[in-house]
Length: 638
Figure 1 (spheres, rainbow, N blue to C red):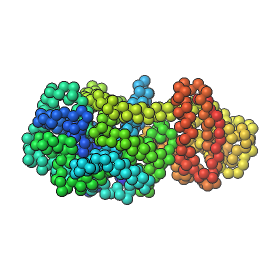
Figure 2: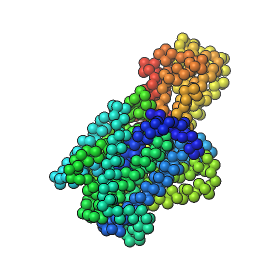
Figure 3: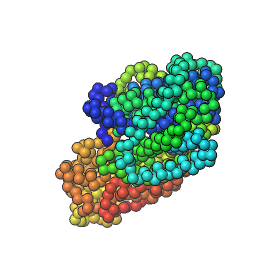
């Protein structure tokens, strides 16, 4: 799907202007992808505040206080921070935490002494998003199906099993892609926001006094009355802004303006009407606190509403699952995770991918959560930490981009950071108070993913240094070949090289044992660019080195998957004609021994060796014909 943005939209790179009709179409599509998570938050937010593990009493003051907190959270965090400011920070159109990191890496930040800390912070933010990707499908679908309990108490024992059935079906469907059904997501979500907004409006009309909660003094009074308990409840209020990060992460698919338009025109009004409607309901009937969302629904429409809610939560879950695929693809290209199998499920939309390993791990984690926690209220405690910590990290990285890349005055950027962090850290602190109630799960998962990311990056850096020490300069190698010519056999050989400099160890290894070389030898390096995508016109560089040797360098963005067949076709445009089916490809394969002096702890050495053994093979990942590959093995002590 193409995306566009109006010219002059801040310092970020736009997507080019588009017509009002195209903008409207993209805004509709954004409803089905971007806003599924935040759009289904009314299912559990108010319920968690008044009927959760740390609920407050349903009094008029508390109801107005919680509604005031919800209103100002949506206003300041989503409408102000994300929609107005964060969406300005795009990397050639793409958003998300790795896009911020790539922007910083291409600027002066990468040369500063704080760069390792920024990289670690971004990796931790990405790791937290995996936690979000696990929890969102579980809590969303669970909350929707819990509506059956409102209809009949007998449904209670069937909620968790039905949730598991829905989730298994959702994950099983992933391999087919969403191209065929994705076009209905937008209309379904429009119906969703219209229905929840309408239900809320009816209740508000009967109790207009709830609109007094627009006054922030009620939020202040809420804390003055409830003290520490009020801060704990703030950790439940944060559920109303879960999914805020998705606005930024999905910007590349739709552009800034369609996302902004759909937020202000459809999403925000629908959410506020429903939240205030739930508040009005509680003022009228405090007994409805056990599920105020479904309390708004007339009894005759309860089962259709459960069906619509389930559809909306499936769409929200699909958006998170696709987001985790995209995040993992970026992590692979940026060198944070091992190669994994990536299946493109659409010929037209390059961004629609399926990753089997990630899919099944997510499914197992989601099912485990549902079976372990059983109820959405118990699961809500695990939710907020991932969201709020990621938002705080995004604020800090945005500050660095504004200061270093855009050259904002430090004072101006710092003022904005203080405003952002005032909300982010307040929410994070409130959620940390619920650590033992479920927050431990999110942090444990994030730290586990972070350990994998950092270990993989450090291990690959060690191997790059190891092979760098073994590398022979090209001019020295060519002089040696000229002085002692080896046997040259017909054909072309491509040697994959980590670095675009020097002669790769695979070539030296081959020459040492075979004492022969092909007539044409190509040294191929595939590098990760600092941008999401690279135009084909600038993707490949070819250089003749003499004596039948060539250097071929290809660059891929962090949202792309390299393909050697495409690289060789583009090389033909640079006057280096190569037939992929008449070429031999030489790849290195390491056997890692944990007895070396890499500086990593023994458990990290063992983890890195395990990850290396189980990484998706380079032949398939790079799209090389299997029958044309020769693997040269060697042992490396780490």
